[in-house]
View (cartoon, rainbow, N blue to C red):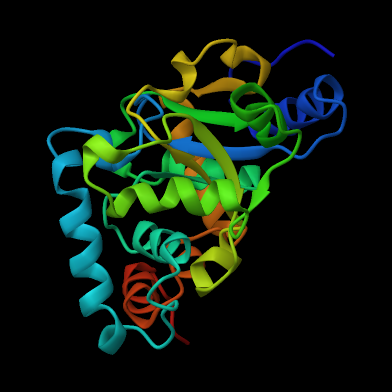
Length: 249
């Protein structure tokens, strides 16, 4: 089966998935959609945020408990990073999903970006960990290498020990983790994932042409891949309901 470099309709998305199943020897793939072709760098490493990582993390953990019904134990920094990431705080994580449809949603989510092509990335998490750590699997969130790397978010920068990337399976502590089929890559430095040595052994890029974005935007809504279902709170439900053109009677 030839490699699919552009995804223009649902058939080409299925073909891209089947191609990866074939070339990656049926290993699990993770997917990430971006409405613009940004580099694969966590938000904390963009701009001037990295020097403030320690402060942001401490302030979030100290103020989150009365605002959220279920927060991790104070010393479980890995779980805290997962929670921070899903509620918009810049962290050293990148979001991935087991679902290519979820990735497609994020690639076409912003209508203001529909004049520019989007991107879907496919990641082989086992191959990434093999490349970076000589380990042949994605790691659980309590694996010592993961907790050590996550702990860098609370250390003074000169003490950082972990400068590589890990693919991590999180414990699902929040409903967003569940509905988005979330996994993460955990980054120790600002080098884009696609610029790591031999990145073609674990990473594949597909373009979503600008002309296809509007179609995908509407068809995903018809398939219930929507803002209110992937971010299932009352505010997003209300926004979705009032945006629909209901015919009564």
